[in-house]
Image (cartoon, rainbow, N blue to C red; front, side, top):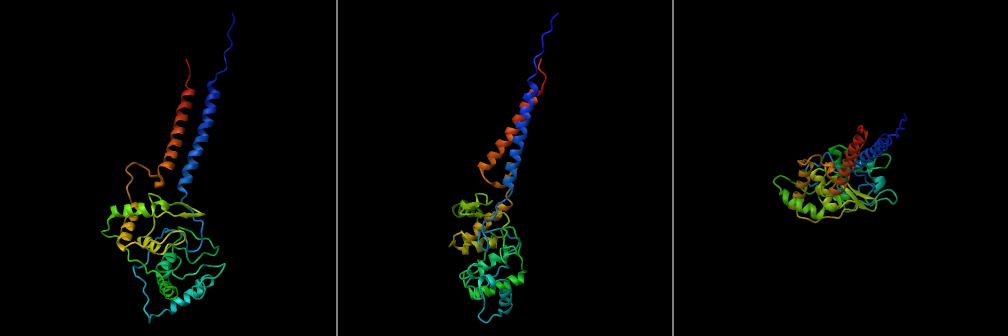
Length: 280
C-alpha cells in the first residue's frame, strides 16, 4: 500500500511573512505617532519666532514709562543681563545680539514672558521655556527698554465678551497659514517653525501681533480684532473633540496617514489570523 507524501504546508511560511509585515507596519505607525506628537522645534535663537507658549502674561499694564519714573532697577538689571548682547543703549552688538530699537514695551514683554530672554547658558532658546525672571524684574526691564528703545506699547488684550466666530475668521485669514488651522504650529520655511499656540497667553498673542518677532509680520489690526483672535485661540486651547482623539489637530493629511497605517496593521493581523486557521 503506497502512502502519498504530504505536501509541506504553506500556511506556516505565509503566516511568518504576514507576521513580519505586521511588525513592520506597527513600527511605522508608532513612528508616525511619535513624529506627530513631537511638537514643533524652533530653528532660530534670540527673541525671534512666532508667538509661543507662555504660562504667565504681563500684569496688564501698557508699560508706559513716566518721564520722571525711577528706572534705576531696570537699568541695573539690563546692564547685568542684556547689555552684553544688545548693547548699552539697545543698539545691538554685532555677532552677539540684534538691536532692540523699535521693540518697546510689547517686544520686551513678549521676549521675557515667553522665556526667550535672557538666553540660557548654552545659547539655545526653547519655545516651551518658562519666564526666567520674576514679574517684578520683568516689569523693570520693560520700563527701561521702553525708554531706551521706544516701540509699541503692550496691547490691552481683553477676551471677555469677544466674538469668537469673528476671531475664527480673522485667525484663518491672518494666522492659520503658519500656525495651522488648529493653532498646532507648522513650518514656515527658511529654517523657521511657527510654534503651537495651545499654551499661549492672550497677552502674548497681542504682543506678537504688534511687534512681529522673527519672520512674523506686524499686524496693524484694531484692538477689537486682536481681542477676537486671542479669544478664538483661547477657545482652541480647550475645544472639545467629539469625533475622538484629535491627534494634535495637525490636519487631515497626517491624521489620514495615521488612520491608514492603523488600518493596515489591523488588516494584516486579520490576514495572519486567517492564515493560521487549520484547513480542512
